[in-house]
Amino acid sequence: MRISDFWRLMDDEFGAGYSRVLARDLVLNTAGGRSAQEALQAGLDPRSVWLAVCQMQDVPLDRRLGKDTPAT
Image 1 (cartoon, rainbow, N blue to C red):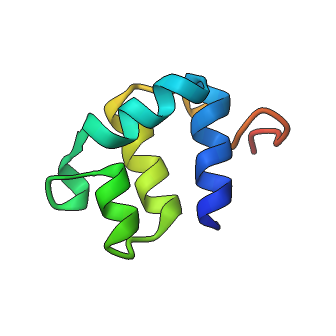
Image 2: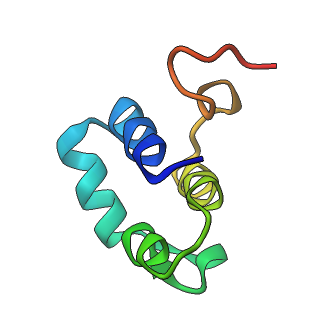
């Protein structure tokens, strides 16, 4: 997953404004206590960061692939 895909998924799920706040402020335990933004800047895999956000925010499994991608 590319970083641009990460941001598309964040915007689709949380809205363009709130996704930036969430990425900046939500502490992800699985990312070493970093925010999503810090984790991406540190070079962590965007997919892992996205899944960590989903887990912390209780995003349903069927929405973790994005709006246009059917769940498998």
